[in-house]
Length: 120
Image 1: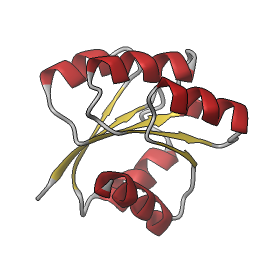
Image 2: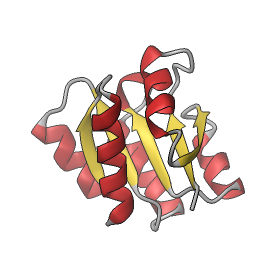
Image 3: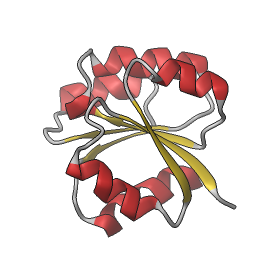
Image 4: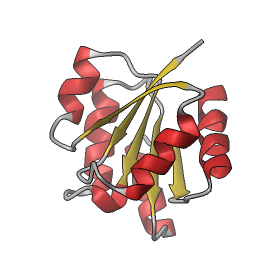
């Protein structure tokens, strides 16, 4: 069954987003929204999973995760970052994130990470 996936990023022309789109196209439809559009998007449409591009978000990631998780507690949220730290990981997990991953341009790694979260 095709999945509805949402990526939150304030950098819509990012090469990483293109890689994510290519990696996840076999799972279903991928939509990109900005940090400001995210709360509206999850009210309008049911998504099976959300990916937050932590390096392309202007606000505090844990706060954004908490706000989005509060609105849709059943939706898995994956936070992707170029500089993972245990402090930030702890913060986003406590806020409701399902996974915290290092941003990668390896399509198989991205696909595997997302599949694992969807199968939980």
